[in-house]
Length: 243
Image 1 (spheres, rainbow, N blue to C red):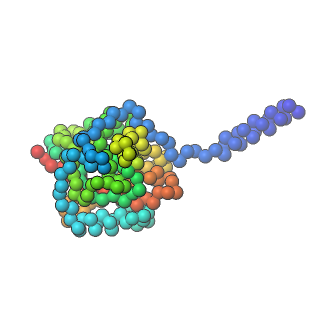
Image 2: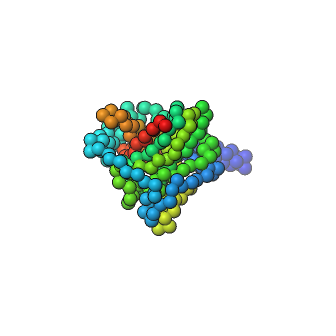
Image 3: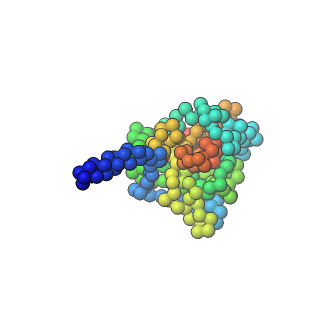
């Protein structure tokens, strides 16, 4: 009788284990990464090194049309999700700027960047040695306006630059950035979703009339029912000026 009971227990245990679902998201921890803010900032997260340029009405309209609010990009423009998101590769000594275009989120997101030798792109968070914060709050209640830009640095050939969004990381009360917030990166390999079709958090769109590449971020875990997959939570573009 004891043998039968034990057999039934073991069989039941295997049944329970067999029915457990694989996780749809796995935390990606940047425990070995250092963080640095490019410039001082005010109580609203507005950096002191802001410059200003004009963002045309036509470009703003293009952005809104390409990434409509709360519209699933998988239905409105699935081709964008099939286009690889490539980091910025520096081939000649250049100044690089990031220009804010718009935000459409309820989260106070921080935008930063990391660099690496072009020949050895990172595949794990441990390979990203430092993240530089550019816009402490580029999300809800941001003090940024379209055309606000920051020179993120001067870079030598052979360096690549990847962007990262820290989800809801700006604390409006403490005026600090929480570096332990969920990171959504340019590189799909560094994002938490397990399904390869859901790992992308950045899309790139070329605006031909001005020869600009718009960068759109999705700031919610794409396995979540709360995710609208509209990729307009923060929109910006980069400018690379050869020296």
